[in-house]
Length: 395
Image (tube, helix red, strand yellow):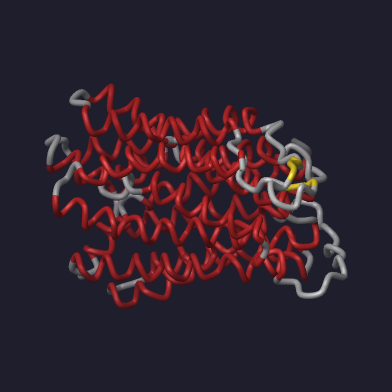
């Protein structure tokens, strides 16, 4: 952690504080503005699509332009978006603000590329998990504060307080040092890394990993309310436990992720008898394996537990989900050089976002058949994905 990485981590602390104020009650705000459940779901789905579509173009820009201005632009976009949301007077008028705010997520792959250069491409697993733990740290207490503020004043006030915290976050990130534009490698076709067998194999594995883990996430509050009979207020508190888990577990998973570098292997081809050198693309990194195992345990506890302290433990363990995201980005950095790193970060973030769009629809269909099915599916798929990673890494 040097000066630049510490400043980015501080910016994420303030951003986590601001976003945590409204993130968990945003559907209630949209409802307050006159939207019905179908319209609420449609607005959030459109925002998710805009967010997913922004990652790859932003990653490409991070390889073509100075990264600091592009990164700061994401912070400014988010600040404008949250102000527009707070100023909305109808759910239709909310759409521009939601879309602008969703677009601000483009800076995630740019931040990853900036951090990778800031630490000379070394110990990326530890760097990513530690910096993004700053967001989790800011999110620990803010959901409860946001709910209290909405009741004491109004939900619109929540967004204006968030804008103030986003301004502090912006002030932190504008102080980072600029970086030069990455030097092109001179290879033919800048899209070639995305079409390589190594990246395509990595992409398929990342997609399956996050679909498997995310199946148990979106409808967990509904399951706890409908099946467990828990009050909404207590379910909301569980979000703080998840943020605390991410804050603690992410750096630990990052330490486990160090040393899991891909190494070339060689074998004799059975037919040609020639020595074949192969670089495996799907390495079962210890941190990623442990992170998925913790998410699996969390899903099992949520399915079976009946007491609040045990549910809180499940949400703490589920905080490992964000660590898996950072570790996956760290693995993506090993597939290319500095000149194309932003593009691969953007592509990887897009794959994760697509998984997070597909999984809720699948979870909803499963939940309609039985509230337990999303958890059962996640419990079955996570070990299957881990096994496939081990087999692919071996061969």
